[in-house]
Length: 329
Image: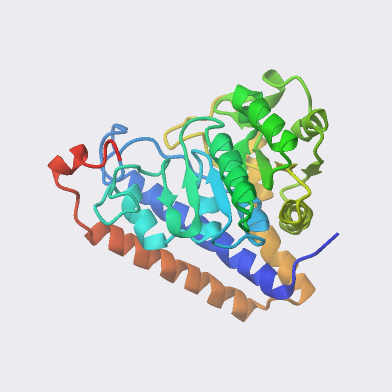
């Protein structure tokens, strides 16, 4: 098992903190103007909002092995992955606020973040990113260019037709692509065991002649190790792999979700296993980190997010007529 270096562990810890603080800020700002009666259309961040808190290890463990030239496609719950892939934080927040200075001029919102500089995109459609990831891997193979593609999906997406179609093509053509399933056990409000015929989706990899790996317990270092093997295999012409990660969704499916579908005690149990304090303690125990360093890293993470929030708040909204621009580009 290939373990991360101390520098990589510190990088992963910091990106997890940036992602968590970012979402804590978004959660607070999102509710502005939506009380006392919740109205999704009100406030500085209208529309749906899907938080990824609890899933941060999935993003950093994978993206620690990637560079800007590698392609990542993500889901409707994308913030942690965007942060780990290096998406510009100021422009990302501005996009979430619907501002002109956003990644797409405020047109995409939080489920459709796009940053060509680091080859990142996401989609609100289930399994939608899998096809583009396979296409990106194919283009690199045909052109003899370096780089791999990584498609992040939720466990519910493994029951979509796109999952099976793309795994089949990736294996048939031996493409440099890695499929990552973030299994948080819930597809909106439907439990995995009520929707999926097998206990673990990584077992499906064998049907397409590719390696399948399961990583338990939301373990950051174990995710890093599994990703190292899969991404190196893809870079060296070995073809695709599937990684299934047992993770946790600490919030509801979306902001405003009452979560009545969860069994009693489940959410409290998940919060008690929050991966960020757990990883912080691991680094302290290993001597990779001390309390002073931990506080400094946390302060730096908060500073980055505070700067991005200020930038987004102060940015101008696009002019109404801009809604008709770039429609057919």
